[in-house]
Image (tube, rainbow over all chains, first blue to last red; front, side):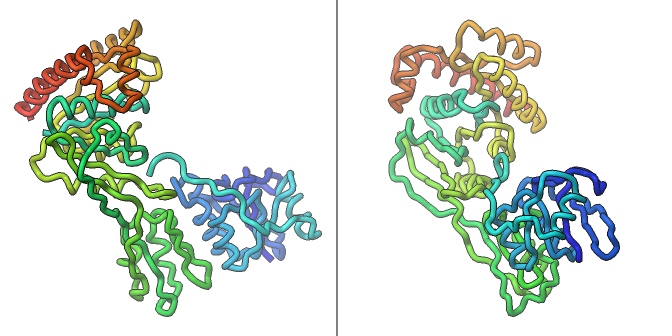
Length: 122
Length: 281
């Protein structure tokens, strides 16, 4: 089982980043290997479509779920179609959230969050 | 002759200067501020013809699509996503560049014209009037500006009322201009954004001058900067109750005999500057 967490740092003890598309890092947790590996998020600097790009990265990672603050409408749609579930994080570290996920304590994100329109003029 | 009017800061008087000067010079007026066009309020154009502005947006043929991912990797705007089951298209992120359909090896992408706004062509007095407007919930101004530009017959003398800021849309407006008029207000904020706009126009190597709108006792903020930067002050529009009243009634300031004189003088100065600029280019 693999899950992706949005993170503000690269360690298991790093805090969760509640932003999805513009998260600083994605951390891929592998349950079999018990490892946390770092996936960079180049999409955080995009003018628009950061959530779509982030969803693509999650799909390509092979994860079955993503733990983050909320998912915008586009990311929600992409992940749903790919069969990947979103879960809302607990405040705390990545490890805390992985533990909570395993104990089924995290709330599934069943509706998309608010859309964040691109900033500035296109 | 093409004159671009810009300001950096919004709400400084680009439209006031553009409309009044176009009317004083008797040349075409072009409103490139398609996010919030308002030149029509003052020039009251007639015989306006409305045309849709479309961009080509992809449609995926899911029968032909092999989910090879090439289109997703090609799109620079993240408008496409590959869920492993199908390709999703997010139309509001699409810039209509057509790269996805060119890149698709299966010819599974066709395109349809999606309306993103409208453009207007008409006349005011004896001159041409051009403007455009974005459609509700559509974020892209660029293609509308490009389309308006295409409608202006070659050789038509015109004034371009640019959008605020120093974005790509402003660059599109200024591109190809013989001269740029920088409208500013005598405030620290006005000066700050004026400097950004001046930097842009300098980069594009277009000669320019400054008009101070709502001129008051703080004009020295702009005048000192103009002196240091070797930029000419083309004129000043007073911060008067009378000017504000005429503006708020959607009329041209030139309807007031006192203020009309100011625009005649700005016109003369601009013409002198433009002929100087053209002879040196």
